[in-house]
Image (cartoon, rainbow, N blue to C red; front, side, top):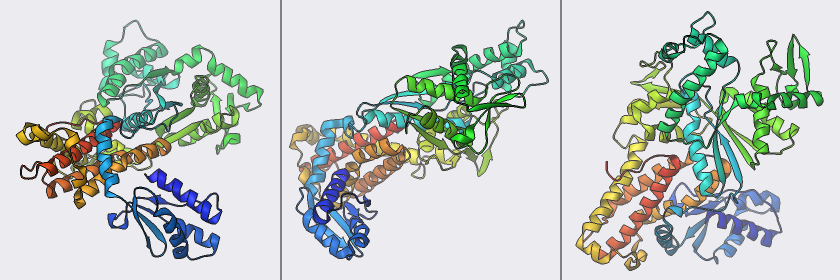
Length: 530
């Protein structure tokens, strides 16, 4: 309905004032007593029309109050227009949800366009650290939302299995003077290595593959992230694609030689300094392979590319984005989501090291401590630009303070209520949903719960455009909160009032459907019992 009201306001402004385009806010009021939707359009128009916001609001109100499903329109000083939808509109939403089930909220926003999301992409030189791990729940949940909005989505992990970091891994396994990586996993690889392998690059290639297969892929599986593709950086080199990019840049006079290295004129693409493309030792840098990789992505026919990376890669990511837009002339095809750091807190203190591995506290350590559901829900709850302080004590707490437990408990309680209704003799006689008189749902807690259910389709469309996945867990908590409040005030299974019971059971079924679907999109289980 939010989208429809925005369209109606635009049309009204055009018809009344001959203004084609105006930027205004139309959103859900924080306090439900101010209606179901509120807009500041009159205040935005006031300086343009040189009239008072209240006068403009009154003219708009007279037009909008005749629209179906709008019960009344009120004006609040200094010029807010508040819309109140009819009870029947919300009651019909319950019926719609129970008919559509998990497809409620599906849309055609994506028009079947092809999206590629690249995320996690940790180097195969050790277990996945929490900085890379943060992109896992975010990228996977975003893919789920985009699919629900009719996008074709592929999820890809870029494997940095070539270059200096692989060489350094080889030195580390060989334990020579150039060793950089340490920890139990390096010691284990040293023991497993074929004794006849002594070339650092050969050992590094072998070790990187073992880490990918024995550490990274199983950890992603434990996180519940199933990638559609694992793209090898090495393949770009062996196929000659990196050399092709270097030649393209040379022909465009975008590279030069200095200090024995080949430099890319990245300042022409918005960088603060030029970057080395080929080192003096012949190794090609991330810039060369990143350009080749993104050219490959475009050649695969995707309509949109989304990269989820740590904020420490921001400058390089912006150069790649500029390369795609200005050198490959692909317009606004690449979107960047940059994530901030994750800290793990226990008993008020930060945990930095893994006791088990003798290295940094990694993703598999966190999964072992609190499980997939807590990791995915809490990671997804933060905007990418926010730092995460992951409180282990809170994540394990079985109370309403723990948002994961709070939401899952709401789902389990709903399942218990509906199970009791099915077992009840009156419920058996009346359980046909066609018998439910949804017009009986008029209690303020019922109305508040139905309003929250109505928001779900608009939220899915919004996230499809903005990628603000953190709004999903917040919605889940809000819906659970309204359900718990409803349950405390309204008896669902009431043998003395079977008609109202049946209507409330239908409402509770609708809540279960939307809550379960929200958790599915986040990648969190919806338990029937707890």
